[in-house]
Image 1 (cartoon, helix red, strand yellow):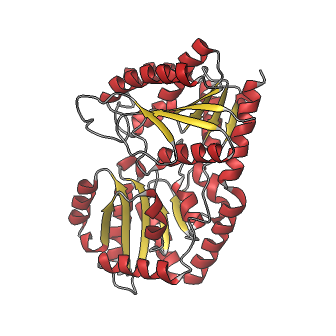
Image 2: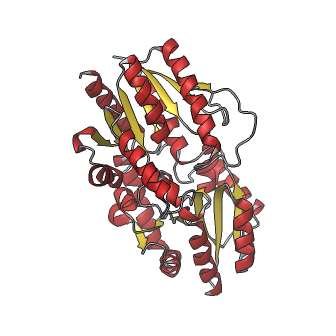
Length: 397
């Protein structure tokens, strides 16, 4: 039976990263499976041609940042709540699918008003995110108030989708959410779109890109794609890069993403490695496979213990060996095929990169095994079926 799904996306959708990709791919696979999906989101962001998107009224100022928490989001979320109510009354959804905690809060109110079940798509702990972004001090009494609000929000939905097993465990242990309410829906990947270079045109485009970045053809390349911030481990990654350059390792780092490009360019300059690091900035999602094709090794220096890491699936599908910090979400995706360093240890991170670059056969074997794992375990078609099962369960109550 096809459903009318109202998705609430309290973010500047679409901006080519993280949770935006999850929202995009979930909406697309549900549409492909015959459901009608309407997304309500912020006034800022890029429209996607094949998605039905409605936005709030524009605000009279531009937020200081488009990523992470900010004070301006309070106003935008209030406008989003009003817009979502307006759309819901017209759209008459069968299911409300709220992304992030703000989406679950807005959806929780609508769910009770319209007697429609709510599914909460949780990316991680809101309290932890605020601390990770340094928006609130870990010792601030405000954090306990936010934690209490998070505890309340976690009780609003009829079902919760988490993007990692660690997040599901956190809900049970820290917020006393019944495990029966939670379904783990790991991020997935289109392995037919993210695939290693095989045809002549793609190989030629890759060589042109490498030349544009002034990287010698024989130099090893380490790639990262994602948000640029301290809690994402970019500072530690640059420290590791500096160690490798000092050791004489012939490697170049291509660090793709936003925001804070200027800040990290300055940091690379301070470390004396600016000629060995490129910051292309934000890259459109559809161009990500070409950029990742540059890499011999991929890195994921994420420091957060509760957030998902969907980019790892893209690395896997590209048959790239992956160096990451040893946190639960990385183990969820990579298992024993991950190349791990202790959390926050730049020297160990550099060592693991160096070992992979020095042993091309090992790196190639790991990359191929990761691609097979991505194909067998992380397809969006499977994810769409799992979402449907959750919808069926909440609608049957």
